[in-house]
Length: 387
Image (cartoon, rainbow, N blue to C red; front, side, top):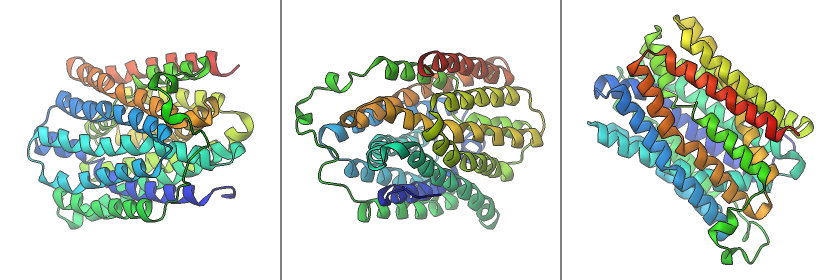
């Protein structure tokens, strides 16, 4: 089942597993902690998440390009994981909103620095006919960490008497272990590809791609405008009657379906092609947000989080594999940088629009808006990628 998965991809998967355990111990309770204990408004919460994720998109682009230009991946991956790890214990020191913004920015900056070089390393390490399988394997371990993290938070928080600061400190442990794996065990060839003239290429030459890749980025950009920070999903869940203690379980439910679908979807895409499966994932996303708009009970929220996880499981790894399919080997880092840049830079407007619609009209309106926009992006994907 897991044949044709090289050692480096296994190590990167384990590192992602541990990092997600760390991050997702915190993520489900963070919006409640910020809004209830630090008294941050929904709009400022959207600003924090938007700035943290959008500003860091520049790091995904620059680190991807630099990893191509200097033919080095590991150094950027190591720095990225280390910065994210440092962001966990420092959350315990937060007392005002601007401090939360700074720490969330540092955490997301680490993610931005590591993501493009890591995806490029996965792409070039895997055999060409097993790229979907490789990304599916990596995303499976990543999402498994997102299951274990909230479960640990659910078990630990009562023992800590709801002391969030102590939880933030405990979350540093798996993040530290992931850094050790990357720094001490991940191996990289002296040169990630055989293109000695890459250091002389200018940025605009790295950014030259064919039309199909450009249309893919357009579809992803439009889709990302519908995909605000997931913190709003937890606010919706809480308003629909899910108690704070059970919010981490929602993340568990979502990542169970993510984990169940990631590897099979990746393997299937190697045989059937990626675009139609991605299209199916976008449609599931639209249906899940339509459901969130009208959900009024806790059991409905749990079902919708499971459906939302199916979208992630199908689309997340396959989009990365499709990027790999459409670009030459010497530009994979830059291509992944553009891909993650577009997703990240749209989080700020998406989150601000979502927060504005929520606060100015009513909670169902932003979910309906996102459902419609995601269908428009699915149409573009279908028209440009399925030929």
